[in-house]
Amino acid sequence: MSSDAYVRERHAIATGGGREIGAAIARPLAELGADLSLMGRDMDRLHQIAQAIRQHFDSRMETYQVDVTDQGSMQRTGWLKAGGIA
Image (cartoon, rainbow, N blue to C red; front, side, top):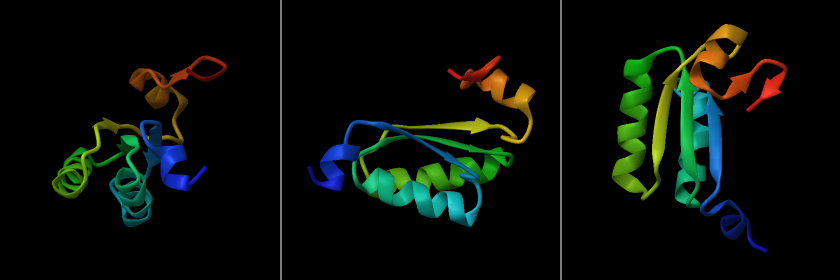
């Protein structure tokens, strides 16, 4: 199975999505057809990056303002439940 077939129609999470490394990870995943959740601390920057990616790729994308080093912050997004990932 090719990597694009494996990624297509799956959901990927890119932490640090408002920074260069997170955005650099998100772009090829969107290009391969994955739906994305961009997570980061700077919501304005997350929205800018999501908009730029949407202009080039047909990928569903959600943005979450979250600090992944803070368990409470992760729980508020719904991605982390007490004891592990949802």
